[in-house]
Image 1: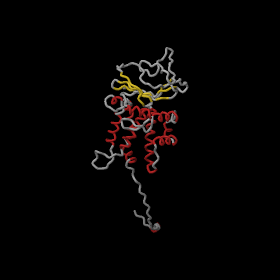
Image 2: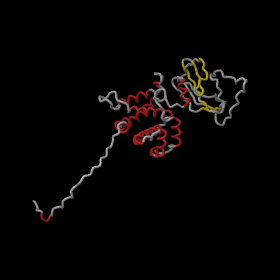
Image 3: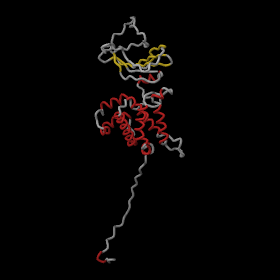
Length: 317
């Protein structure tokens, strides 16, 4: 199944007049499925899902019609989204498309409604702590053209902290700074490697889930109550990562085909060299912070004795 969404009329285009009450609607195309008119000059969320031989249309998260349709795979063929192009390269449509996405399997009605409403929760169990739109604007407006050192300036850090809702607990100020530094380093790495904002948003959500997993109780250690170790956290990282790969999307229900295998190798190399290579250090700071006890005592010392008279000394050979 495939779903593509986020379409609307261009801002410069004047909305067409809707038919008056009692007038017949405009003629429908041969393959029209939806019933809602979209030429009102406003942006709308459009979704099309193909599930079990049925093509379903959605407008702003609500079902808008369906039709039985037999689809035959056409490998290697081009995919066109929008109105047909004329011979001169112009389009007969005055509308515009933005944020077009495709999935390897048909999403459920609840998942489409979540996409339309901007929900942060994904069906794989993670939450998008940083949305793709925010990451895209952050790259374009804050760090475009800057050097690597500019990623850690106070103004940029404050923007990321506010987006992650960090700094609210004064007792965990240092822990929040560590999390902010990791996310900043991840955003810089994704920007330099040309990772899309959507993929970056999903991977930040995966890593945020791993940081939460670090606080759970270990199921393998001998001592009861110990936090999860590096092997358990890496297995959870592997499970979440594979649930968002294109290969897993075609094999297991609930998986989303977002990351390609080259993306997986590149991101795993980054995480291995940061979090998992220094896992004990991160664990000591984030999960088991060491308490510092300061004790003040008063000690009395005797005055030092006067040095002996060297004139009375004897030379020993």
